[in-house]
Image (tube, rainbow, N blue to C red):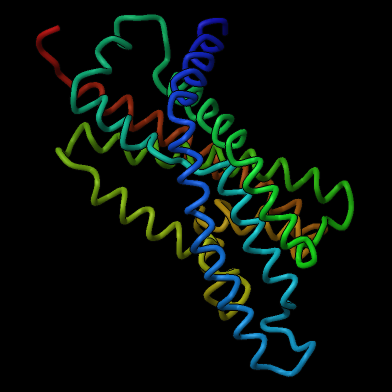
Length: 268
């Protein structure tokens, strides 16, 4: 374990070198969030006072997008899939085949270190943003729901990482994986709840989405926090989310084991 703590330490130091880049990315990332919030305000302003849209009040809808931003800061896979694919294409993984270090664990440590720095840099601007919109922010109903929310956020991060890792393994077979990564990102953005709460969709469509891992990459933890998923549905959802995490992990391992048999590199 000592070597992986060292990897995390190196990852933190490398990410600190780009802290200004992180800050600008975070600040400008609030622009589409503001646009979305003002769009929903315009929608609600055209309705009688106190009217809900798809069982969401204006405060709940605003809270939803604020929570999506928070979960995204904590769990988003920024450039890990591109870097993994580049390591394979450029032959950089050869060094890991000759050393007693597991590549997946190595990349997972770097992912956690980048999230730590990203969160540290985002804390102040995100805190100010939440402060100015505090009248619209809804706090969790009880500590138990908040605890389940945190557990779900951890699994969301793992699910996103393992999914991206498995997608990057395509670099063993194809020269350019960017198209596949963009397609996956598009599906995640639409089907995970980034763009809109999934429960505003027709019930049949929402039910179909729950047979995929996408809702568990964003909407599910947010729905726990907001009290829209409770009781047995919440417990069952946590088990299903855990199952997706385990499945994505084994798919990532399987893709690596198959890909490494095809891998070849020359030079040094």
